[in-house]
Amino acid sequence: MRILHITNHVQKIGNGIVNVAVDLACLQAQDGHEVAVSSAGGEYETLLASYGVRHFHLDQSRQPLNIIKAAWRLQEIVQNFQPDIIHAHMMTGVVLAGILKNNNDYSLVSTVHNEFQRSAVLMGLADRVIAVSHAVADAMVRRGISKTKLRIVSNGTLGSPRHRQLQDYQPLPLHRPAITTVAGMYSRKGIAELITAFMKIAVEFPQAHLYLVGDGPDRTMFEKMVQNTPLSNRIHFEGFQPEPQRYMLATDIFVLASHCESFGLVLTEAREAGCAIIASNVDGIPETLDNGTAGFLVPPKDTETLADALAQLLKDPTQLYTWKSCAPQNLERFHVARVNEETLAVYRELVTNFKPLKVIAREEVLVSK
Image (cartoon, rainbow, N blue to C red; front, side, top):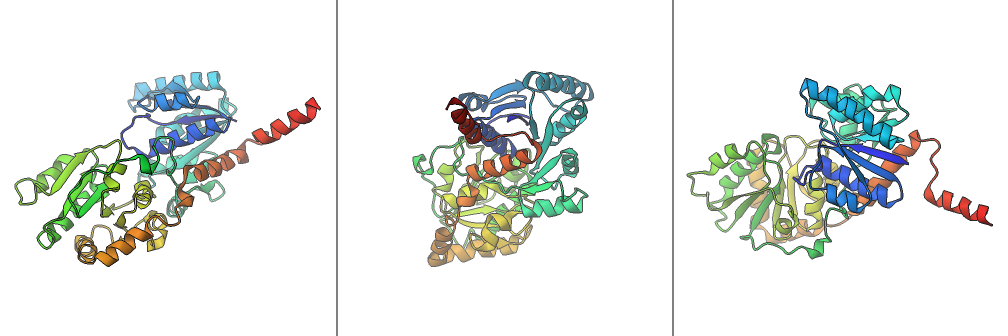
């Protein structure tokens, strides 16, 4: 198949949507498909090229004049590459590819990563809509997307071509016990609630430190919560880190306190690293934590319950060890190879003349005989 992925960019900034698209493009090219990515560019262009993935520059910034230019540019890319499948991972790409679809011979697939955004309903313009969790699929049905279009391909990034093997990362020398989150610095990620919960238990556990790994527009607001408090030297704003695994491997308790979360990819990486996990019982997170058997689920926006959960694990080494031991179990389904195979199966529903490489090779052998 000839597969064209559309994303806003391919920057190495911790964007989960971009990471998933890059993983798929690399693995699909590795499987022998002709693969390209259209985006505004970024650091992952080098990785994509190493897998034989072509990159076409496409600026999708949403100024009216630029959208018209982007439509013309995408038409040029389609004529050049002649894709069987366009897989759009963000809203603008779906709209552009949907507009051009009537004049071109390709099928359109979209993936809904952030269902909570109002614009997510536009992902339904595609011929097939991939939901990254059962919770996202249910939400899209409620918003009017036909079940006949929807397919569930649960997210997963373990074994990603973007990463080294976990054992190749050197843990950082964090203060212990270490409580860590890896998340964009947005209010919806529950950063304020995590800081507040830590402040509630900090006196009882004077050795504990909190590490906030990530960047984003609300970081200054969170930093102001901590400034001029006695805990300013125990709450660490680490910014974006290209190798968050080094933090996770040195972490005792990993927290994702999101208000909404379609899947929570970072939780699979925290599980692989063997962290005890506390996370919000919302949207796709329970699926990511095996419905609470691989991590401690708490209500979102509830600082009291979050603080109690932190204190419970910090005061009981046996319980902490138990949760750490549970986290790395049953992780096979979070590997990128499974995500790729299930995604290709969605493509095959639309590309009726597709023949797997093994079939083609077998036919060539028969002809040669």
